[in-house]
Image (cartoon, rainbow, N blue to C red; front, side, top):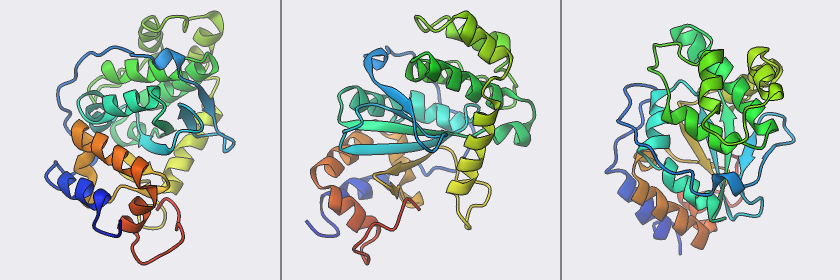
Length: 255
């Protein structure tokens, strides 16, 4: 199909969704099962900042840019398309990559984002990143509250089987992965390019190297629409590229 086909229909439907405005008020969250996350492979990429969860051969890659304190990220992860993406990742239909930002510490004060990103990197070292990532968003404090303290991060780690250990606890308390936190923030800022020098809004999603256009960001908060979009991209991956960049033959990059 050409421009305006299956993917066009899926994206056009997303225009009916709410537009993403960046970190703001969150929607209500809900508790859900881990549903297989503990069995999904996860690794740190060669760039030293990208954390990828899922089958490395999955046909669709969804790259997310998130800050642990961002309430709109929590909305995506809890009541938006996040649960559907997790299940697609568990089923091997997609893999999910993460670039973890910490800009909200400077914006609203405190150190909770940096501490949470450090703890997530420590969880990756224990093979429990995906589960812990879900726990942190389930129990995210209010944006203005610097609630991701060392004690709270360790308390939440109790909810992930096999995560707490002397090594993990020490990594959290001592900010073992401070260099990773700083590099991840720089990677996030670089992802915005010249048009967004401070970094893109959070959450931002890039699917198979193509960023979801801002006009269609409502798809991130509508699980059925997002599921349909992933399915259509799997069926016709070239059409996704053609729809967003109809006048170019080669992939121009994620942004």
